[in-house]
Image (tube, rainbow, N blue to C red; front, side, top):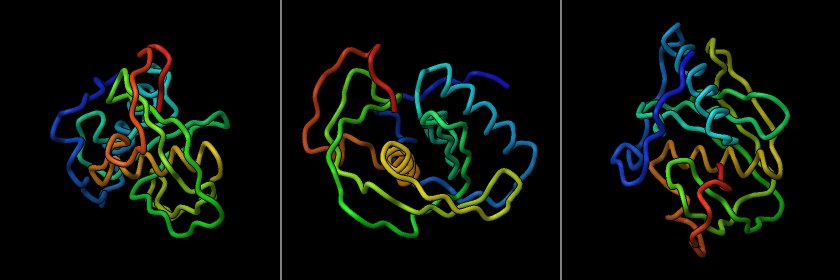
Length: 158
């Protein structure tokens, strides 16, 4: 496992639509392990593969209840209210923005071995998953924020 360099805006890979993962092998497992290490090292709650320079549909998240890995994630259902809340991004240090997101979503994707998994997420985990999936589609929070503002770069995260 290793800490990878986090790609910073305006690197073009952050604007690409990431490729679907078709091979669930040791290379993917290493990427997942490295992404988790990188996310924890940066004090983030989520990280998408494009943020470490890899154009693959892979995300990791930990909003306090343990590590979640998801490959080829998609939102298959959402319900209830949407709400605005400040978001930051490890790839855009020094900025935050108020972003409207769904409070509850259901995700479908694969685990590291290629098994189909589903996950229901609310509150912070829902917000984090939507943010990371945006990364996989080349969308950054600054594209969808109602308002973007400067913050202390030592107080942000994803």
